Length: 506
Ligand SMILES: Cc1cc2nc3c(=O)[nH]c(=O)nc-3n(C[C@H](O)[C@H](O)[C@H](O)COP(=O)(O)OP(=O)(O)OC[C@H]3O[C@@H](n4cnc5c(N)ncnc54)[C@H](O)[C@@H]3O)c2cc1C
Image 1 (cartoon, helix red, strand yellow):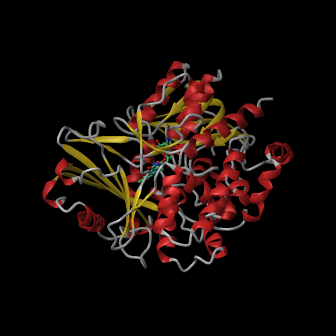
Image 2: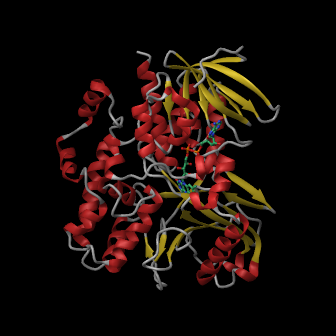
Image 3: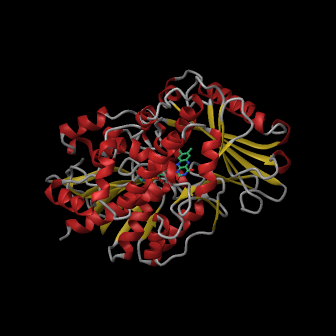
């Protein structure tokens, strides 16, 4: 963090670094509550991992393709209601996902109707009824607690008192599970050797937590697995994922907030341990400038926060951050295809595992999103197919032949997709791929890490990363903080960040 003073070019009350869903939601809420807010985005378009790009008439969602929290009372719906802006148009995904285990053609369909989903689980995973009943109970208890908007993790005596006020006697029933994983709960019911069920859980949890059943906190797992069912659900946006970002930008502007793109924040400026602004590289004009602000909100990963702040973060906290397990990267193929490739009634989201013994990563498992007729992603008679897989980020930086590695991953992904879409190879109209290097380049996330901190018991809930940073007046928002990744997760993070910032003024 630099402490020397330079002529300031602009003053504002709150400067938000990054226009991902986390940063934009925070900015729009603060603007709606009367703050003078300026958002700086290093890319030329806002949206971060939830943005889109266009090629040959196709619109591709860069990362996020489905959303939670659009139902009445869901986190996005609540926020849009407060902002006075309509939710972007969407359709319900039913099933939320069709999950194909190795060698199987009858998928596990994650139905939205709880009764139908209950029957599907019993059909697909015999003898697992009591396990699912326990997860449903943990979901109900955790969701009930979550609805009271606890601020996690608690900081200071005030934070613990506020948290205690949110507890109810029934919340205590979750306590025995606070330090346990989903795999521990499987063991409780003697199901740890049920390979189909274990791998199904691994695949689904990896999407929401970046960790598998043996590492994912039981309470987090119960919530993420329960969110697909009514009255909650998973949703597919009309047009593209960019619609969510565009509505947030509209709300920001409606409340007199400002957004500047192509502005790369290089340093958070501080004086006597307090953030006072940022120094910025203007990528269009190719010049450095400075903004002075009462508060700085960083919508970056925890690793990038360290880079922005230099030594202003005390050594003890730096060590804690440096010890965090690395996040994964993502490999994604974006395909524009003739619509005859898509089977009739193809669900919008599918998940495949190819080899039971392989990782839920590196193309051994693909999460696939298929555009729906009339959803605005493809011209008439065509469709988009996007397949993503977690991948270790570092090898993509260490390889001697990056292009060959990317071509090989692309080839494997298309081969594997062809098992479900047999006519795929003959009907490809556009092929493009993104690797951790691509994500680093476009979203400025260190190493191209995506998905935040895995929700292990030691990093979940009371032990998660706070919006409050060790530097006064510097706040962190986004998928590194509680409650983790996904557009719904970072929207909760934004709500908490706004409440903490407001509380700090009293
Ligand atoms: C392949 C993939 C698939 C996914 N699928 C889903 C899904 O289906 N559903 C779902 O809900 N979630 C999904 N996610 C996760 C979801 O996209 C993210 O958790 C969420 O969008 C993260 O939002 P964020 O605001 O925390 O961060 P980001 O999206 O990373 O936004 C941060 C923003 O800050 C900007 N920025 C960074 N550093 C600076 C700087 N120094 N100066 C200025 N600007 C800066 C970046 O350019 C970026 O725009 C997926 C993610 C990936 C990668």
